Image 1 (tube, rainbow, N blue to C red):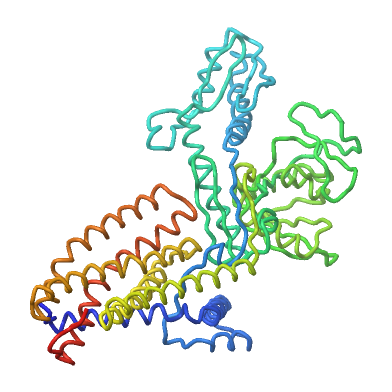
Image 2 (image 1 turned 180 degrees about the vertical axis):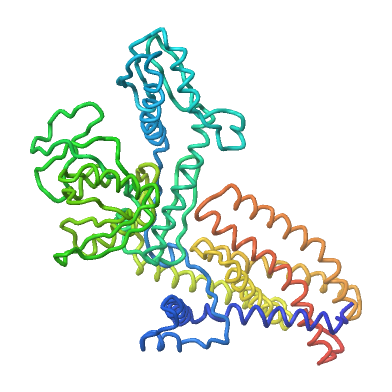
Length: 555
């Protein structure tokens, strides 16, 4: 069985050569990364390049693979945030936005229900009082007609609102099925918007994933600080265009029904009393770009979709000479006076912006509004120096482990131990190649997983070599002893690797963060170890034996 078919040898050596080729760019990480960045920038520019980009592009040959492992936050430095999404806020906004529909539906049957007015209620509940209590059944029927089916598998067949009569008052709130569906939509939308905002500023390999029912983990390597990341994603960027009722300097002014007092972002001590029901919302915004106004001051150009453009155009046509407020997250960033009918659904936001502020505002608006506010439960910043120290420490630990294992194997098993060490080196290269192909993120615990892989890999060789020793002591020929050693040790090696792989899978599924990083490298390492310990080591020994033809072997 020591005779290995030619096709199998070619396949084994081909896999090893391919692994070396794929893993090679990681040995020149900085140069390849600059090459990849320049290549992407030139592609975005339509093929046009600068001398600096051409120089960066020449750092690595185009004919070689240029894939790299992603480095985790603890190796590269960057910002880490754990955010909690206030999903309950969406219920209140959803119900609040139903008031115009409910009002119009009931006013259409005024002869039956009488006059209609909204009364104060807790958040998430809409209460409407009618002047004719005898028409309450008709009023409930009209409001229930506004219900829509729940758009989720678990809520199929159920309506989205619960309508009840309480004397002369109708109470409207979301059903439990709709709340569950809303929670899912809110989290998915928040994840997507955060990802779009982070991608807008060109950060590399961010980790953005849901944790639990209402939390989001955000890790962005290479960004300056957690505060910088929070400023980018921490705002809900809720943009609305509201009617202005009055302007005051009294922060304690009492607004009328369905009105609010909002501070001016750029005018100290100025407050605007605005209608809380917006004319147009940021959800109808389709584009926002940094620009300059007629006085060459930084501003933001915006454009609405068709429905938003019609609403905006109708409002400006009917309110010429009156101010209207552009509100971002409960602050009035600008309150221009409408000079003429603004058609086409586009306009400009002006204010005392810097160029950086107008650019950031455009990014926030273009990426979309978060559906709910967030609070940050955990935040930390890892400097690039600490990341570099982590890489150096991990490299040193791996080198020391490799040398210690090599010394041990050569001291115990001589030439066979040296061949096992060569197979171990190929094993590590294959592990790095698979991480590169999968786009997996290497973390500091992942480096620990690589170190553990080294020990597990030579453990298989120890089982094989000890079995060969036993067969030699019983007087078997070298070829027969080696055949039996590989054959009989295979079951024990397979059992130990399968149990280790099951453990890695469990850690990956149940664990998070550092535990998953460790599980990824450990799981991949187990698979590559099985290949190199059984097939690679056997091929090396068979090649050596066919070349030297020793009369006896010493293991």
